[in-house]
Image 1: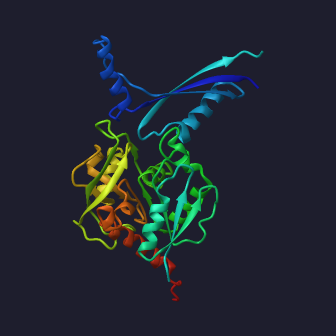
Image 2 (image 1 turned 90 degrees about the vertical axis):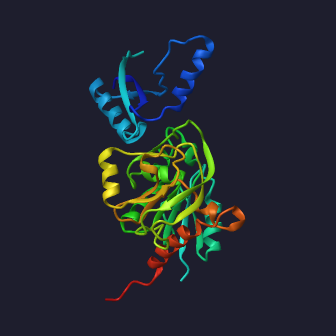
Image 3 (image 1 turned 30 degrees about the horizontal axis):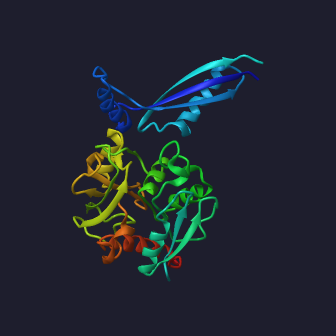
Length: 87
Length: 230
């Protein structure tokens, strides 16, 4: 069965507090970067999924996101996938 | 008959002994429920106490939901059993979909550890049946993710159905509508961020949490009575 490397990027929904992002945004000007705004810190989850095809892999990971990897009340997510060549 | 309160222990829970102590000081009996067991040992009420269940990895409460004990807690809640989630326990109950919404990081970027005032908003819940509406209680909070949030229709329902159980008098964390605690539709499942067990004796600085714990024991006691013959 083919394997797919999946990346899930989980970020806060608009309006949800992101204290880590806000702290970094306030720290960057101290290094001279005064041109930075809208800093957001989220999570990246990488996993390899064996599935019949890429669509199936994406569908399964989407289900994983809904059930565990993200909380739809406060988070959104983006899934990207890459087909892994067989060795 | 003594009300038996089960206190759930996940790896990383750290308030279970405080809850047991407070329950027993009020005449109840407390029973630790290990998260890996799928039984509630026939208790009359369940407390999901505070701490960092499963290290709070991924999100607070996200992994705890999959512990075997949570299936038993959900079944117990579905048949009307009193279930109270305190602090991390509240987060666990939202992740387990026993309560709506979520707890996001505090506004103001600070971990908050202080005694706050909360106002009882309804007495129709497993945690407030012995209190009065309008009672203001001094109870400690101790959290980083206590900022309650839900979508607008959910908030509308919570208000319309009188399901906001306690509100902060002065909002310490940005919580939506000053919400400190809510209940489910059946009013037997309650989650709140403040710790009643840490305000259960004057020597702790406040005994205002006693009325909440007494309410829980009353709800538990009602279940421990023999079934009515009719």
